[in-house]
Image 1 (cartoon, helix red, strand yellow):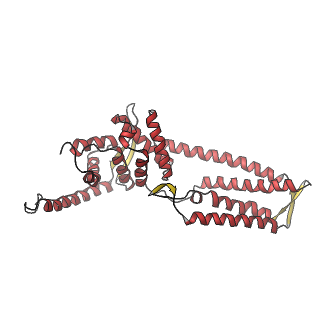
Image 2 (image 1 turned 90 degrees about the vertical axis):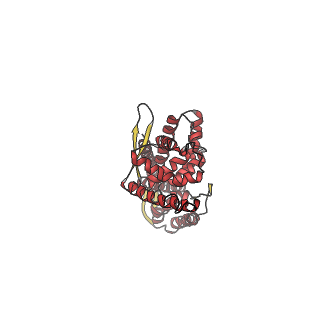
Length: 117
Length: 211
């Protein structure tokens, strides 16, 4: 859904999974993650929402930080998925699939078994 | 950083400090803000919203500090406490003695090496001085029984210290009346030098945390 007008609660619920998935592609930093989320159609995620989430992932040991200096620009904190982060991503992907299947079954009762049947 | 963002950073820093975040965590968070604003072209307020709200949200996600004592800072505190004890006893000795020598009593000794340091530790250590904040009302300290217990203990120790001084008056040695003030002044100078060194090394650690 380009335009990103999803209810904010939906985004908050799925943001951990989305960020873990982005970091599974490659190490990245706050602004680039926000850009990637926007490009995926999730809308503009403000720093005030994104960075506390990144701090939570870091505190939980799911991502590891490293500071890199840009060309003449400010230092950036790159985040890389840890082994625990990769395992958590696999777990959350499974959970998300089950969750959306359950929601589909309720939201689309006429389509037998929901959309993921 | 533009003036507007400097004001934002100041408010953010204050609120992070109120929330109990360390200097290193605050420096790293500000480095994130600077990098994000440089990339996006937004002001700190546009990108992160109200600094107090952002600081509260971010501090809640930081790992809890490990309870423990900074031994170097604690050592400085004890040195300062003993120095004040020596100066206290020394100034009274100077005032009351007409001779060049004053009696060194057990009471004075216990006051300097036990009662005054214990009193200072009770009233000046972080857990007694800085009361925790309730997340619902972060702008004012929460009720904490330990704080009041420490205050009452400190008051009790002051009374015990005075009682020791007056009660245990058997002379152990006679010493020069300038000994206590001299030792106290010397130790005070040393303790302030040590405090400066500890503060400087902590500041250097904080500035290197976020390159």
